[in-house]
Length: 214
Image (cartoon, rainbow, N blue to C red; front, side, top):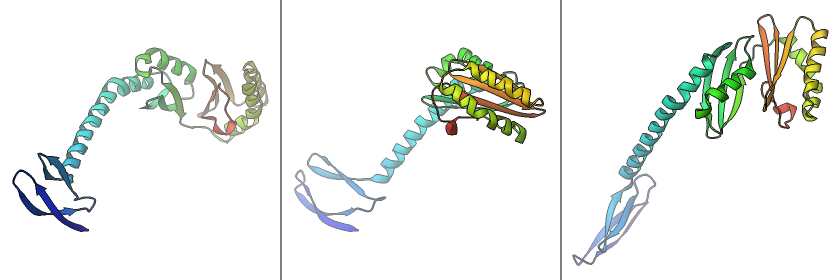
């Protein structure tokens, strides 16, 4: 859509026709300077803004990669029992995406990350996303243990979780199971041959349906 109008300039005492193209991409902008309206195209301004934003974002990405993400990824990857690790550092959370061997000590890994990576993590929380290598037997084991474990978690009677695991081990002798705990999570590890299931249960109240790695 094109509109025509008059341009008044008090300094040169002329009246001239001007055209304003009001289409979104190629719209012409007018600013007041010394009594005259000067025409500026939007496209160069937008391009300059995009380039500036790209430079800022690129600089932050490189800074985060060099000083934060790479050192933390190296720390986690070198921990015993870790096959591979990917780190995602967010403003309020650090996500550890892990592929673990059956003997991996998840509670020990989290403690090492907190202690040695404190300067990187700061006040961020740690979220674990563990690759699942379970089988039907391990999933069945956990489905039977889930409700007594959930009850113990709800009532904050964490010693009952160890008791439940020990009882389940007697019922299903072919499956190895152990538990651990820190100030934030309860950790359960199940294994049968090469199959492994790592279960991480946050100690704060949470519904079973949203338990991570469960």
